[in-house]
Length: 98
Image (cartoon, rainbow, N blue to C red):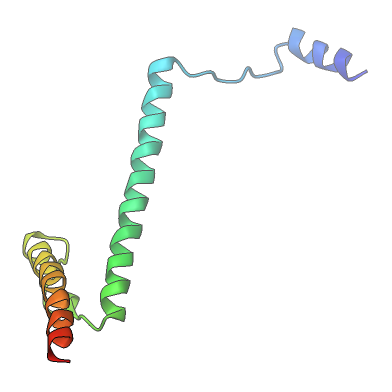
């Protein structure tokens, strides 16, 4: 019953065919989706850095307008290098004093 009705619709040109995109359009759409996903991932990572800095009581955002700009990245790298270099020294000093 349904197949007869669909056949009639098809013969009378009442069914709009589905659109199948050419391969170049499909590739462009895929690249666009990937770019959007990467943008969302980048925003998520930036928000994570902001959250982690705030939880560590580092108020870098109040001093620098763009944490991920040139000077902001310089400050973040300096902070990371400082933290990596001083932590073992503090432990060594504690070990030698006891």
